[in-house]
Image (cartoon, rainbow over all chains, first blue to last red; front, side):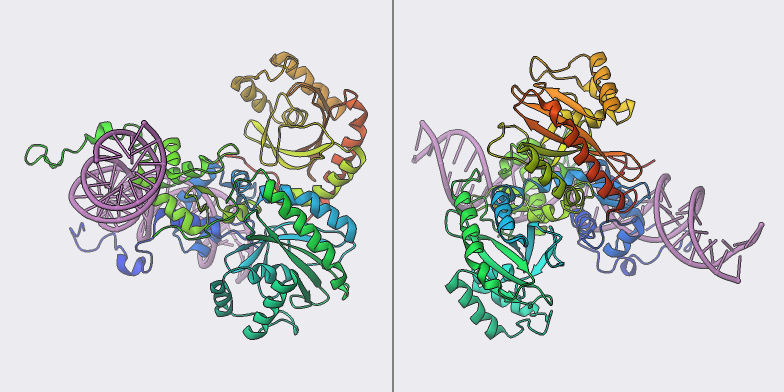
Length: 280
Length: 280
DNA sequence: AGGAACATGTCCGTTCAACGGACATCTTAG
DNA sequence: CTAAGATGTCCGTTGAACGGACATGTTCCT
């Protein structure tokens, strides 16, 4: 270790310097950089990236440079970084992203025209519902969600639909993560939630009153592919407590999208992915 | 080089084995894998990825596994890979992707309602126009482009608008790449193109007749941010030769979006990125 | 103005993660 | 049944990645 004459350069002990970093791959670090960007943190400086990922300046600098050169990141005049257009382009290739959206959009427009309320399309990702598309009107309730945003599975109508038609293991996983209380009316008891999901399966729709945010009432229905598997949930959010009146319209629209998926340009099984289960 | 006793394990000479691979980084390989996915190739098997990227099985296998574990790729039941939902989510953070889209969407809807024709929003990316959003009607001309797709700068109305308001260096770069002839009416002469672009700047709109595909006529107008920089092009495509009648409507709509960008939630300079220029 | 604190960018020697050849297994085709 | 191809796994070698150190630029306080 070049211990020629005493400790002239006085290197820090490598063991303490990189305590938990051993074994991490370059890719995991690069992905950690990308993962540092969220809806709340769309722009990050190099220093912020270092803090969020725990990487050293030099390392982050090099990786960020490579990512930027390729177009995965872009640099603002201010010097901060944002996700690059190249990644947007790539993301558009995901079958549950854009292709699903293209099929659903006309129907969502019709539903929006008929109800004049927020219309959302969400898919299952991990233990959240991911909003893939939404049409909102200035006239409707201000609502927190947005495209690319996430909804809790237990406290949103779309989430309940997705959870109701997923396997038992997702239910237990969701319960283990904790049924966070969003409002006084949020279902935080696993047994009650299970009953609610059963009711959702029986009726073919979920109706939720102020379980996620006050003054927001929503209805959701499942969208299925040609094999009958639930691939998405269509929901309407409004301020009216008589949301149950919208059930037929939402179910109708969801089935209309499902019919499109059956004959659609999307190949068999494309929407039916093994999420996050690489090998073994 | 372990030349102990003859050639028992008979390794191939490393120099011939990896001829041009020296110096490539892990990240460049991982990005090459992601880059192998295109609109035409949305699903790839491991073997296809190897062929497209030139990587060895073992390497590609490991990298793909890591990307899949993180969610950058997903695995279909068939065993093929597609771009993962996690990348879609990340891509949605790009300021010229979703945020621009959110502001533009209502106006595009209005323009679509008024014209009943395809409405497109495109941004500049490299030497192409990238379609960020579109609203199409079954009644309108069948048209090749799609969200996430690309249009040539010289042969589309949206492309001409973007090229007209970009720097001189982009013009020369586009000319060097070659003005590909799409139809008999495509402008392939640099001098003619320059005149067309000047006219586009003067009138504030581009009108294109069958320069990209037969029977497709289009009009485009620039969308600017608060600093006056052109960040996108709004276009209408139809089958009618009297497209010039739509010029006022398109210009109006484009200016309406521009006004939204001025006051919008998008921070100053966010849309004004240094594309693909990492450092120095 | 001085200088402390912080961010960004660059250099370079050490070392461990990545590479790729080889082999194993499984499926498909003839 | 063999051949061809795809996928998955193992392991020794080595060069790419790491991170400490330094240089420079910027901001903000005293």
